[in-house]
Image 1 (cartoon, helix red, strand yellow):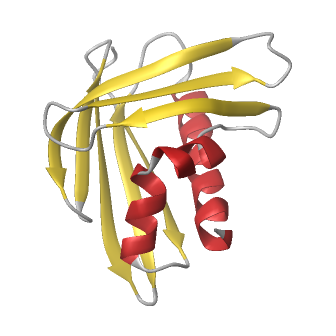
Image 2: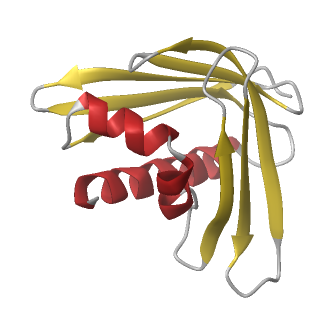
Amino acid sequence: MTGQTIAIDATIDAPLDKVWRCYTDPAHITQWNFAADDWCCPTASNDVRVGGRYAARMEAKDGSFGFDFEATYTEVSEQEKLSYTMEDGRTVTTSFEPAGAGTRVATIFEAEAQNPVEMQRDGWQAILNNFKKHTETA
């Protein structure tokens, strides 16, 4: 861990209740939780409560590489905020707030030390952009 935090955000053209549902429902998570079109998220589970677990499998569509992303929720405020700790101890907080007719989703996460900060920001932002696209068309 670097101790450095990274912030990303997007404003989704959808009401808060739909944004929350698409962000937390595993059936939706598998449709958006990847950074590039040649990747996919074949499985996801989400127990949205303090102490509950989030798990998602992300992998290249050609099967050449994949990994499991797992975390435990430390704070859950329905349609407002989700905080969790990843298995390596880094923390993530995502907030949801009305923004005109849409919803602003903002995530702050602790950077890891293996990859450049810019690469991490770009990857997480690409996933959030996929979420935006999915939610607006779902």
